[in-house]
Length: 626
Ligand code: COA
Ligand code: AMP
Image (cartoon, rainbow, N blue to C red; front, top):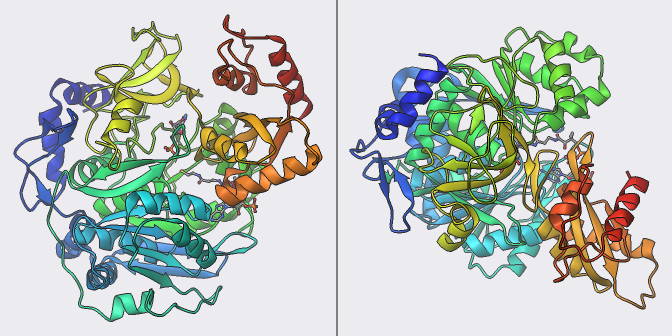
């Protein structure tokens, strides 16, 4: 069946469509009901089904004879390590880690927070939590202590699992002072900290609190799989919203496993036994879905790469990994290829490796800009596929569905909505706009399996952030249009979220941090276009009267403040002092107008603007500091 037939089937009878896909998994109790509405009025998938995600990702492959097949290829150019873990070895390690966590008191429903680099132990811990029916929450290693603390406070884990360090291209990140600071700040009552001691950074365990990774996997009885309800949470992943408080996106067990398993064949054209590489980080949703769960649910081999596209050691790193592990499909962020292109514009390194195994490249995390698409297509002579999704959905909303039917590529478009997603474009009044016209990109409910059913302990915010704006629809927060051929073009966020090097960040949160500086009267942080990282944050800052400090010094302090309180990953390197900000007559900062200005759009000042001259002043300033 081609794309159109499968899409039609999925939309005509979603229950029958997804019940059929549910057969991709082994269930303890096969669901009898596909979709039902919960107490909050939200649709939930496979409500009476019972399963274990870890069993489906690991044990069942050993039972079916894949025990000797590599499950994970770990490759760390900075530490010079490479390791392959078979499905049998993974089963052994995960059951021992699960036994360790259980021995430390972790049971079904308990939360475990991971603050870990890209090492196999991180994947093992995630799967060990799933094995116990516990809920993991991974915090990206580039976030500062305050960010970790906010997540600890919200998730209230019993245990934190961490490592002595992370490895960046040119420096070792000492994790333990960050963890210690976060533990001091959080109100969560944390029993134990499990520490993976890495040779690059020595650490002395704190007696009574810390447990070594070695002890975790050796001092306890291995644990089996705990059956859980399909609707029980598998993980919480915090993502940036419009305020300083991140949103705790909840993923369930059943719908998630069904959607991801199916996506491997339908979207990526991947079969069991194939090697799949998502060059992301386990701290992001791409890492959760396509480094850990989807490849393993499908019985594939997943590559875990603790390196960068450039500088580890050069711009040939991606092609080397593809060649070494015979990768069939590579998934990465456009920014990674922009970085490679910058260093190796002629693609010299591509020819240095035997990449004949590579069949397709998938890109996401930000819009795939046409020049990068063109360069990559010309270089690789493979399908280069832009696909659009978000932490909230957990898998692609729109893609070129390679496994169903390869469709012609249109530069700048994420191609077509995937089966299960009814994507529409609405105007401010909630009316569908004609083809080619831009508006808010929304998904008609019910969302397909795998998408978030709620925010962690905050059903109200789920409702107000996603469901309330357009009744019957899920608000994605992206703007865009659908053309006459039904191709979807995502043009950017319509809220205070920006994408820096494929990392989702909140300008609202940066504003809160900047505004906390004693010299700042008010500020706005906007994302300006950047040729390498897609967007970069820039602060526009109004100072309180009578400052004795020089502007340069204040700017440096603001940059450092965001680095300390949010993390280096924010790349907040510019704060521009301005006399005033554009506002409405009622005093609201015109953020949407500023966003347009930062994107280089020709903006028409809204009729409510207090003084249109301010916009010209800021436009001139942004031009001076490109
Ligand atoms: N732990 C600690 N610090 C981290 C980190 C991590 N996991 N990841 C990034 N950082 C730090 C970096 O060391 C850097 O610090 P610095 O300012 O002291 O140099 C800062 O955060 C910014 O990092 P980054 O955005 O990665 O910039 P870069 O200049 O080091 O590298 C790219 C540029 C394009 C190579 C890099 O951004 C990249 O690989 N991007 C792709 C990311 C990706 O896959 N995103 C998709 C997620 S789906
Ligand atoms: P995240 O939740 O970190 O995956 O970020 C999701 C956001 O990244 C989306 O809401 C989009 O703004 C952006 N994004 C992701 N993939 C794409 C894409 N293929 N095209 C355009 N924007 C994208």
